[in-house]
Image (tube, rainbow, N blue to C red; front, top):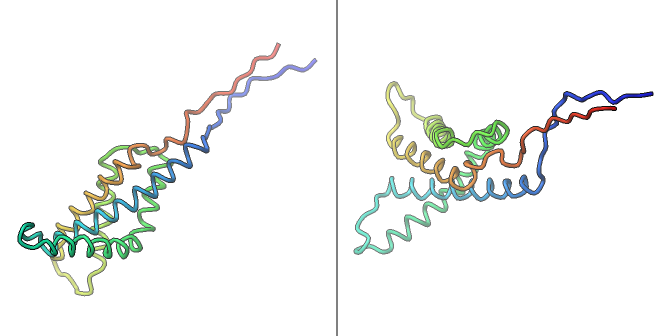
Length: 163
């Protein structure tokens, strides 16, 4: 006569459809966050001017921002990929994590991109880049960050009793 012993191991359950939709949200959120960062940096550096007197300034700001977004996206892709993976695996859904990490990535790349030896202080424009990073992190959190790890369901204890 054989008896089945209870299994005390818990198995993690994953939903493939939730993972697929979360990957779509991550992709869309990253692209949208990079576009927001590019437009914010273009607006911050070139000024906003008077909207009624110069309509071409608005078009120039948005087109410069879109072009800058492609360059920014290429530079921040791998650091953002690591941050997104950490947030997904650890289910970090807090707004402060996403905003803080995006600001740190933006400022870190801005500071390391300098050719000049800075003896003290921040580079000019650091506040614009930091604020843009915060805004990009908030944008990403709105689209995908607040649902980090949603594709992982709670662990299920699998216990069977024998008789």
